[in-house]
Amino acid sequence: MSKSIKVVFDTQIYLRAAINPRSICGKLFAEWTDYYHLYIAEQIEVEILDVFTRSKVRAKFPQITDATLFRYREIINRAKRVKLQSADILSVSRDPKDDIFLACAKAAKADYLVSEDNDLLVLKHYENTRIVNALEFLHILESRSQD
View 1 (cartoon, rainbow, N blue to C red):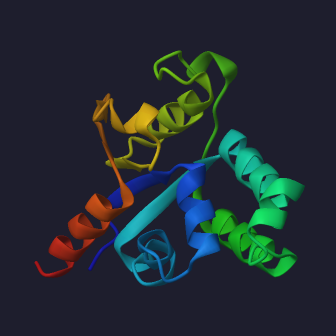
View 2 (tube, one colour):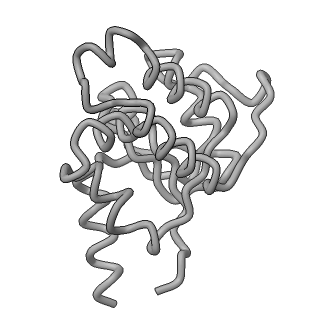
């Protein structure tokens, strides 16, 4: 199948996948990467790496190790990059920290923004991007794989 789907994942998707690689979020990275193009902006990368290295996160989730961080850096390095200027990050979400994901999705012309954050999910769409949770995105990928 061709990788025609463009997607942006929010930080929670990366974190949940790292915490439990067998979870729905984990499956998106382990089993379904042939079905989509992952897009990322530098601002998102910085946030992900910050979360993965926070002492509180490491204490709560000991499965997040330096090896885990290395693995996700490799995933991030393979993602397609979009450049965001501060003028590109508009105030859209009720949580301003989430606006970077919307700006990245817009710049990438992403089909989907995958999130577990209700501040994003409540929007349902932004520009031409559909905002879905991980389970819904997994179902989308499964249905496309059967075509």
